[in-house]
Amino acid sequence: MKEIKAIISAYDKIDKAKTGAALATVVRVEGSSYRRTGARMLVTDDGVWVGGISGGCLEGDALKRARLAIAKSESSLITYDTTEDDAYQIGVGLGCNGIIDVLFTPLQYQDKNNPVEVLKTCVAANRQTNILVTITNLEGFWPNVRTGNVIRYKTVQSLAVFADAAIEQQLEEHINAQIESGKSRHVGIRKAGGEKLAVFIEILLPEIRLVLMGHQYDIYPLARLTKEVGWQVTMVSNPLKINTRLVDTVDAIFSYDQLSDIRIDQYTAIVLMAHDYKTDKANLPKVLQTAAFYIGMLGPRVRSEKIFNELATEGQSISGEYMARIYAPAGLDIGALSPEEIALSIIAEIKTVFSKRGGTFLKFRHSPIHERS
Picture 1 (cartoon, rainbow, N blue to C red):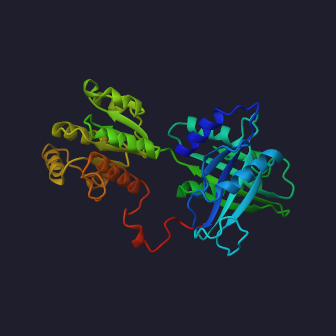
Picture 2: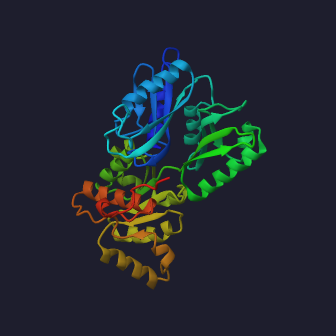
């Protein structure tokens, strides 16, 4: 979401009377690549770009392709194949060993359904999962749609633009499958008459929100790193103890008695870091009643176990289901010493939990880093 917001910000600053622009989107990856599907790059015809579709190796050619799409006012799908030993193939010799399809779409500023305008509606729909259907290729007669069109799917009625009940039904089935998996996918559909349609079904999940409950100095590096990663940061603390320097770093600040006012959903992580035993103990049962997928506690294991035991004695035993969401001590074992290193270990653990991964060394992983299509 951070990249999307940067693209929207750059798009809004374009002098639209003088400058053309196109959006490059990775819509299919086969094998290995630095960026995955959904990676985007905004390109203007004066050679400026924001975002990226690779580690920098394809951007040069992508700039030319985007400017050509702007000049022709026509979307195009380009395949970069780094698996072939072809000296004339862009990306050869990179060692990525993958095939990447990139859709280049010229942006018509007057069209409120152009890809960036659609992304704006997704960002405005705070904390919602958005489903985008991007048309990447058409073969045959398709009177109502064009390559590059982006549809923000809400119900099957969103697909009425295809004016074909069979196509709508097939797309609906594919979309439901991707919603269930929580993953994006490129799919192809064929009409009875032979016409072909290819679309990129993208599942845009809400950005992770990190709720930091405390006010001590170690909250600063954790808040800064969280923003650098592109997540939202909310601080919960005693208003009288909040340093004004945090105002420019966090997205929102609440007092402890306003905890129920925060929208804590399944994409929210919470870290108890008050450095006050009684405060963390009082807050733990409250945050366990929320939908947060991760609850971290700073401090040694003996401290958290003491809190668990005291709560049990007081009739507030924490069941296995609730305990599974608690990470105490918070963070991965990276040998962190300083507040900055501790922040790194906590961010890494939250990402590990959210991605349902193990957090182990990649050199010991025998399967591909990312799922292959």
